[in-house]
Image (cartoon, rainbow, N blue to C red; front, side, top):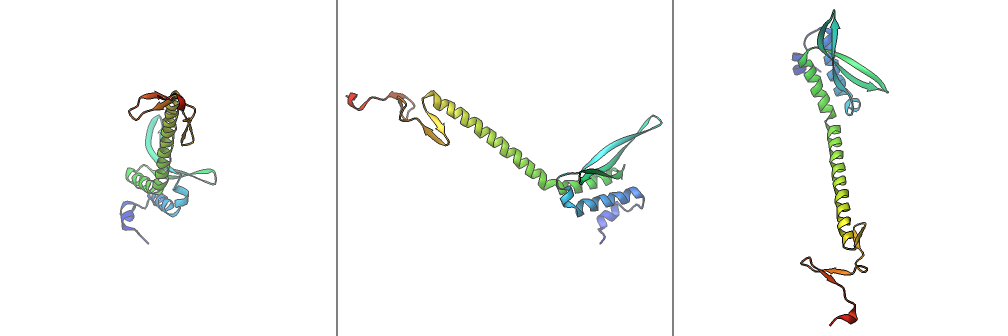
Length: 158
C-alpha cells in the first residue's frame, strides 16, 4: 500500500526521512491521539560555540508521558508533517472556535440584559427572567410616542 506522492517526497533511505514517514503514518493511523494534541517543535543545538539548526521533532503524549519523534532539519518533510497534523486537529480547532463564539455571544447578551434592566429600573420596572414586571406598581404610564403620563385614579378623571 504505497502512496506515490509520499514516496516521491520521502524516498531517501536515511533514518531521518524514514522517521518522517513514520510520523505521517502515525498521525493518520491514530486520529484519536492527535485530534486534540501534538505539535511540531523547533530546536537548535550548539556545537563548539556555534548554533546549529533548526531541527524539528513531533511532540505528543501517550498515557500522560511525553513522547517525541525526531524529524530532522528538512523543511519540506516538516511541512508535510505539519499539514497532516493540521488535518487531524481541524475538527477540534473548529469546536474550540465555536465555543469561544458562544461564550462571546452569552457575555454580550448578559451585558445587554443588565443595561436593559438598568433602563427599566429607572422607570420603576424590572426584569424577572424574560418578563418585565412592576407595571401595576409604577406611577407612570408610557405613551407610544415615548412621553410619560401620570396615572390618575379612576374617580379623578374629568
